[in-house]
Amino acid sequence: RQSPPPPPQSHPRITLIRGDITKQHADAIVNAANSSLLGGGGVDGAIHRAGGPEILEACRALRASHYGRGLPTGQAVATTAGRLPAHWVIHTVGPVYSPNDDRSALLTACHTNSLAVADTLGAKTIAFPAISTGIYGWPIADAAHIAIAAITTTATNVKEVRFVLFDDAAYEAFLRATQP
Ligand code: AR6
Image (cartoon, rainbow, N blue to C red; front, side):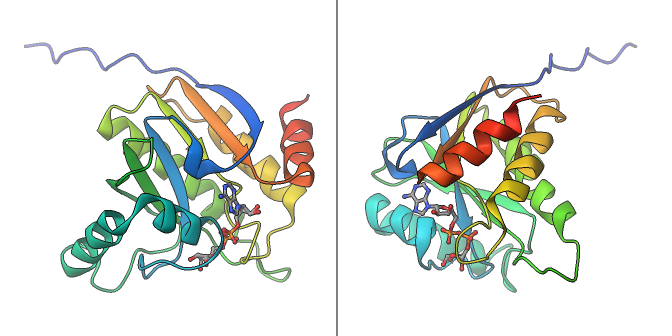
């Protein structure tokens, strides 16, 4: 007996916008979380504030079940998006930047694992912030290249990946990274 053909996969369209990820109408938005999954500053704080306590409750449940020791760096997991316009929040943990240690494979993994989670959810549109480029200190130009390369080389059923950049410098860096 033949197994069914694999579902069609292609590369998503990439769009860049300046703005606040908590305001995005997308099937899923990605949170630049920390391993605790219990909130923090930056985009993580903004998502929990705008999404309400349902997200934290879901994160606590994940800690009590699958992730007793926290979500490892580079992995991704989904929760409800509470009262945000998106349907899901995909939490991923970016690597802290180190000039002495190449952690770019972990930053790539944040993007590919978030896309894999989106595929399991059936999400077709997903919005990413510039993971690791705030509190975790990753230089924006380098992070932009890693993020764009990860998305353009990953086969997925997601149709649109939207990078939501919080300031002009981040927007410009991502724009340059998408140009040949
Ligand atoms: N929408 C889009 N981008 C945003 C928003 C927003 N509302 N707010 C900030 N940014 P950061 P990290 C940008 O620090 O470096 C937290 O405490 C910001 O300008 O949020 O991965 C977590 O709990 C920057 O370009 O995430 C972790 O402990 C980008 O989002 C730690 O910070 C990422 O900055 C994670 O650090």
